[in-house]
Amino acid sequence: MLPAEALAKLDAMDDYDRMLAYSRFGSDYRMSAAEVEAQYNAWKRGENVAPSTFTNTDVGPTAPSGQSANYIQDASKYRATYDPSREGKARQSQIEQAVMCPACNSALGIPSVRPIKVTCPSCMTETTFTA
Image 1 (cartoon, rainbow, N blue to C red):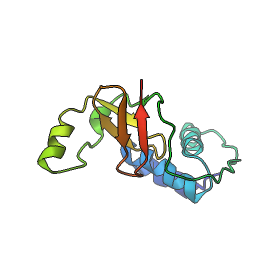
Image 2: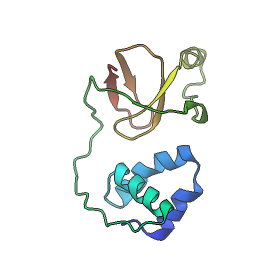
Image 3: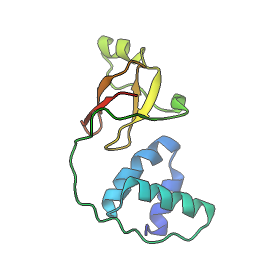
Image 4: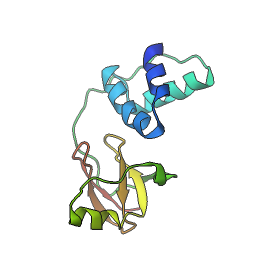
């Protein structure tokens, strides 16, 4: 179970930073990012949270290819400035959708073209989205 001070730190963050912190807190407390998020949401509602039983030690920057994207509903609140070069700005102008990196849960801005191969700038995992 996450300590109260860790949950309070998550609560003080904005949505984007909190989403990124789930993975970091998960690795600190030997939990998955989904478990951290579930504990935070339960804590926010005032519920008691069961301790984590996550024991997965398999870590690596690989994601299965050909998977469906986990879409972000309100992409306007996420920063989409990865590359300040002229080419980078041209690519950023083509962003129409935002998805979550399946490896680290970072928000990624992508065009609506499918299939698309994406390399996450946070964890360098290469993923091909088909849907």
